[in-house]
Length: 153
Image (tube, rainbow, N blue to C red; front, side):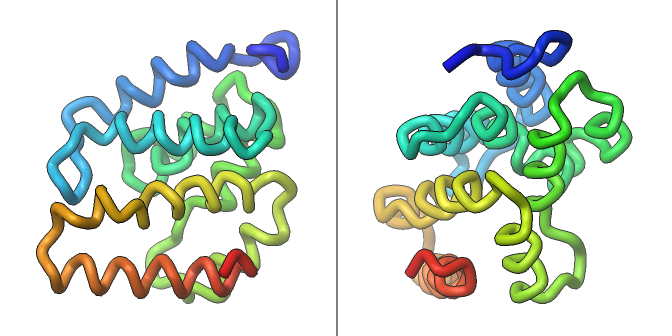
């Protein structure tokens, strides 16, 4: 696997640096640095056989959704079209029904693997264990429903 899918695109190290900088100071629901989640999703994609474009998308998977980076940044970024398509596919839109979100992921080549790694880390029992019972139960149900909609159950 090459670090750069195509000449003229950001390397995976550069994408990681951009993602870490964009999410600097952010924490997850458990109070952990958000970059830990990004790293775990990128490693999950790698471990599942994902390619460099999918790994790049994993580093950026929450950037637009969390307003860490703008849609315009993504449009202009030195990334492959496929990486951008995957990031857009896994970016939830306000008020969007879960079924629509799942259809977009399933209809975008390479996106399912990124979402699978994201859900796996989000649903990690060790990660959920530090949350209060109500939040843990709500998130467990939410992640299970999305896995089912994506055919991952």
